[in-house]
Length: 189
Image 1 (tube, rainbow, N blue to C red):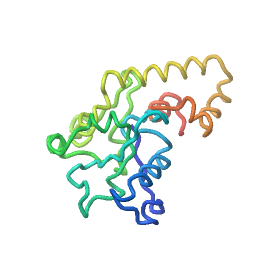
Image 2 (cartoon, rainbow, N blue to C red):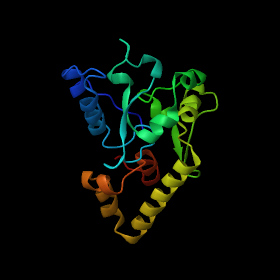
Image 3 (tube, rainbow, N blue to C red):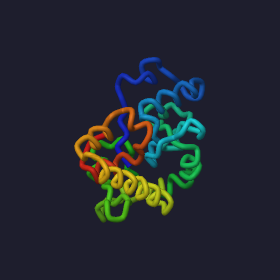
Image 4 (tube, rainbow, N blue to C red):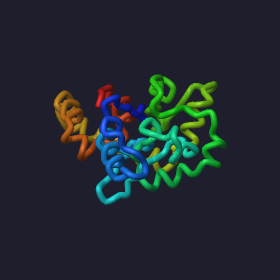
């Protein structure tokens, strides 16, 4: 999982979009800002899949405190998996996906294709557990994608492959699980 960036000049902010009135526009902006990836799984969300506006803290939904910093584009499946406010309370305190130090606190482990944290970092542990990002099927999907890319890497000119992998066009076709790919190939996407 990668840190989710929020932008001061986001259209959501500059156009003062409100949930639920501007739900469709908000979802489109979030999807664009996140590059078409699910905020939680980093899997590409195909056009044929349902995309939800996820209210990270469900207790804020449709309150005055709810807003852009609490909204993420996620696959419908993962939104359902995350659950409700009762489940949310069970996992407090929790690390926010926008935390500045996010990628230092949650690290991709290349050996296990899972995300790890320092033992004493309860907020990071709670986020990993809450979002179930070390789900067995998700770990398998990440490992399979890395294996495919490693096989392609072996078959091609390595320098050109890494350059190609970093281009926007390739991201639409092969790049999912960006944090895993960045760690394995030591590149920034």
